[in-house]
Length: 66
Length: 129
Image 1 (spheres, rainbow over the protein chains, first blue to last red):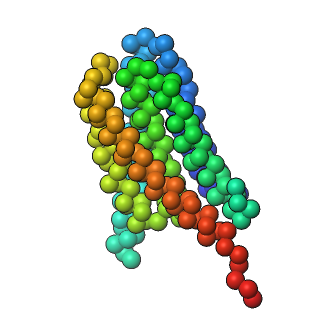
Image 2 (tube, rainbow over the protein chains, first blue to last red; image 1 turned 45 degrees about the vertical axis):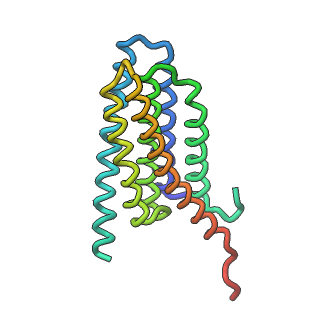
Image 3 (cartoon, one colour; image 1 turned 45 degrees about the horizontal axis):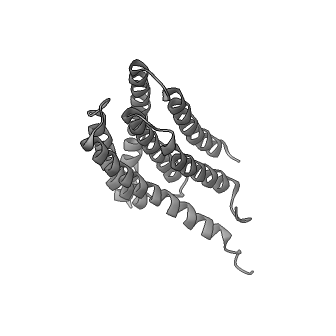
């Protein structure tokens, strides 16, 4: 298995596990803790969206260049 | 999993299936509007990351990857609008969340179909020499 595949698996697994942990922490959370949850997710979301958007631009360029 | 799936495909298929299974289970765990929103946002982040990685590894074509933005961008917009309704939630929030989940499901469909197509190709026996 090549390093790229391992990196892919780790990225996906980390996203899923982080999500489960965050939701478990949110159960019975106070309003302040829920706000903290939103902030944590917002940070992760920003990174994810930047990555997706950058990849979209690359894909568009590849398609345009044929 | 099929014997002819490559190790990489097995890993990616397993992760995609696990994500879908977990996300199907999670609705029972989400109570407050914030938790429901968080669940949906995490699901969308997972799908976006998966699509990027699957496109990078060639499982999702550039054409299908570009197609996915028709669902990802509306899902993002719906979740951003839904976040503005927090922490109270309400009817508008519920409707926005439903829109987001429908769009996320469509984006996940692109992911699943690409994995299924790749698995089918991998399962074909090699041409006779």
